[in-house]
Amino acid sequence: MTRFAAAARHSVRLPALSWVIPKGWPMKGRKPHASAAREALEEAGLVGEVGKVPIGTYRYGKRLKSGEVVPCQVEVFPLEVKSQRKRWPEKGQRSLRWFDPAAAAAAVEEPELKGILWKAKLLLTTKDTA
Image 1 (spheres, one colour):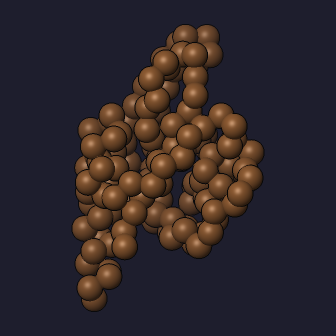
Image 2: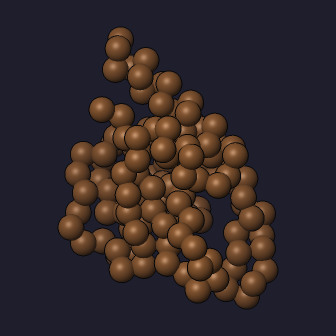
C-alpha cells in the first residue's frame, strides 16, 4: 500500500494546522538527500532508505520568527520508510499523520507539492506493478 507521511507544526504564528512533508534547511557537510533523511527523523521519527535523486522541487514562503517571509525552494527526496521511532526530537512540536496519496495531495497547501505527491504516487504505483 502506498502512503505518505505529513507533519503539522503547532505554532502560534500559524493557528491552524498546516500539513507539509518533513523538510528543513541544508545541513553543512551533508548531501541534500542525507539532510532530507535527517529531517524526516527529527520531524517525524521516520527511518528508512532515502533516494539520492529528488523527485521534484517546490517553492513556498517561509515565515521566520521575526515575521519576515523568505522565499524557499525545497527539493523533495523519496524515503522508503522502514520504521518509525516512538520518540524523536520534534515529537512534542508536531502532529504526524499518514495519508493515502489523494488525501496527501488534498491536505497540503502548496500547488507544486500537490503535483509532486501525485507524481510520486504514479511512480510508486508503476514500481509496485512492475
